[in-house]
Amino acid sequence: MAFAESAGGGGSTSSPESARKSAPPSPAPLLAVCAGYFMVILDVTVINVAVPVIGRELSTSLTGMQWITNGYTLVFAGFLLTGGALGDRWGNRRVFCSGVVVFTVASAACALAPGTAFLVAARLVEGLGAALIVPGSLALLQQAYPAPAARSRAFGLWGSMAGIAAAAGPLLGGLLVAVAGWRWVFLVNLPVGAVCLLLTWRHVGRSPRRADRAMDWPAQCAVVATVALLTGALNEAGRRGWSDPAVLAGLGLAVPAAASFVLRERLARSPALPLSLLRSRTMGGGAVIGLLFNFGFYGMVFTASLEFQRQRGFSALETGLALFPAVAMTMFASVLSARLARRTGDRPLVVSGMLLAALGLAGWAAAGSHAAYPLLVAPMMAAGFGTSFALTGSTATVMGAAPPAYSGAASALFNTTRQIGSATGVALGGSLLATDPATGVRTGMAIGALAYLTAAGIAWRCVPAKPREPRAR
Image (cartoon, rainbow, N blue to C red; front, side, top):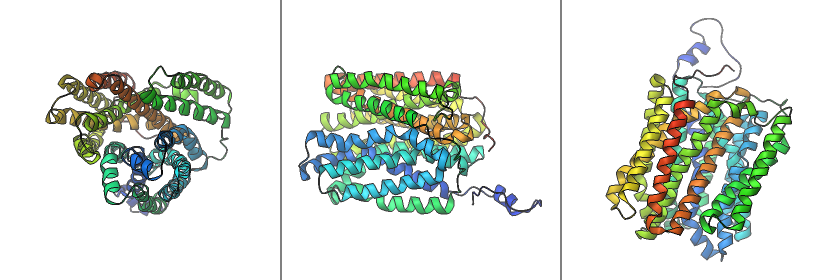
């Protein structure tokens, strides 16, 4: 199926244009976009298993290992809005493909790294490539699948990639490190990146370019500073504690950086993210929901990973297998929610998904920190299912509320808030476990359940009740 900008054919009902409209949408754009997104999210978690081995082989200090792990996340989260703005200005397909190239080349550099400094630099470039890939991914899916039903299915499968990649990271990383060595953690990105690039160029149509939109570089710098300071402080809070001066300084400096961004956007002729979008109840509510369900899900995965390995003595591979029930539900839930959205709209799906996920984490909290593993399977399945079930509707809500000219910026906003939610959930989980390993898991799961309940309440007020028609282009 071609996705050209210009219409073809004549006025006959049997024209090629009519045939294209009646034909089922091609899965190729979805495969291309999901391949790129899977690589990005996988690299957030797969490194956790490999970094101790990297540290031994490259004689890396603890600080160096932290930069190998967190440098990627900081650049990724910090430059998401920049990636979205570039996509709106230069065309989302062009920026997406550029991100895939940068990410793939940086992955090869990581695999060939002779030392720690080189590896850290390559990881930073990887994060930049990821920031170019993710905002365009949602915009390209919205462009490739304009019909509401097909678009819902595409958004659902896109969302399930995050849960699958996040939880598969420890399992895949453990296998690769044990069988082939740590360098293969990065080398696996090369064939995936090549296939993603080929599919995108062949099956995804060119995106509109809005060269008249100036890049608001002061605002972009303010966003980078805000997100980098905030995520950096949250990442360090899990290790240093919330009262550490470096953590407090990062959180404190993030406030004036965010204020400078808001002030700049009020004054800019061509803002990177118009404040009217943030004031929209639908857009703002969808972004907050994204933050809360990432907080709950990634907090659960991180806390469970540490608890399984430190308290139960599981290996990295066994931990990946133990988390599989949560992952297995994400694909099924996303497909089901996409089908139901055509009849129910997004609001019932987001609300019910968040309530089910809250029930799952509350069940884990009630089971206690030392519950037998079989008792945790159902709570993990409920949390995984509920989160993925809600993600499809919240994604469609945010993207449906955005004007076409700002589809990349809307995607970037949604994914930035999700990254902040992930960083907060991981930081809180690490802090709770460090403070009291005996009760940290129970407390973390209870807080995650509360976050899901809050998201359900916001969804009831902010997510449209009826299926949303795509905006005219």
